[in-house]
Image 1 (tube, rainbow, N blue to C red):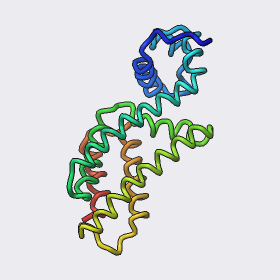
Image 2 (cartoon, rainbow, N blue to C red; image 1 turned 180 degrees about the horizontal axis):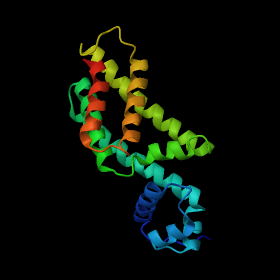
Image 3 (spheres, helix red, strand yellow; image 1 turned 30 degrees about the vertical axis):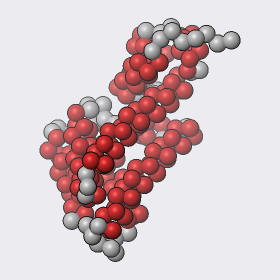
Image 4 (tube, one colour; image 1 turned 180 degrees about the vertical axis):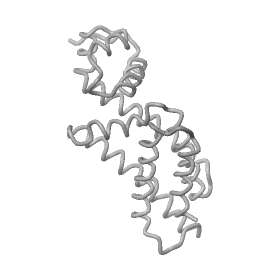
Amino acid sequence: MPKAETFDRTEVIQKATQLFWKKGYHATSMQDLVDTTGLNRSSIYNSFEDKFNLFLECLKMYQGNERAKALQVVFKETSPIKAIKVFFRNGAKQSFCEKNGCFIVNATTELGKSDSLVVDFLEKNERSLKKMFKDLLDDAKAKDELDKSEDTEALASYLFSSFQGIRVTSILAKDELELNKIADYTLSVLK
């Protein structure tokens, strides 16, 4: 019978997320995880199986937190176009403040072609964001905020790709203004 966990699982995942986010998956050693989480190796293995499964749990928690923040922004706005604009501007600001970039984008660039479980996670994340954008764009059409001839599926893909680009660019951005200009130019297609 497995031992009961005697630690706060959420806290351990949060600490491990910060470590993976800063160093990347491959550069993070088991000893790094032991030092950061305060758990011994056997506790990590007993609770998470291995480093990779802990990494996946970190990605899922990060995604859930980011999705909750995004949905708060989206549902607060009555105008779907304004919701997209606020989402982008908040994302640019957050990206600049997060000096390590976006954890999910970092996982995409590091593991996006090498592991099927990570690829599956990333593809689901992409579909979810594209669906959010498409739903908002379809709503914008219905409210006459967007030209009826717009291809909302293609536009949703463009917005997703642009948002990911902002997240990657934020790693090297010198100031937030640079990211805001990219966001504004991207959003100019919605006028």
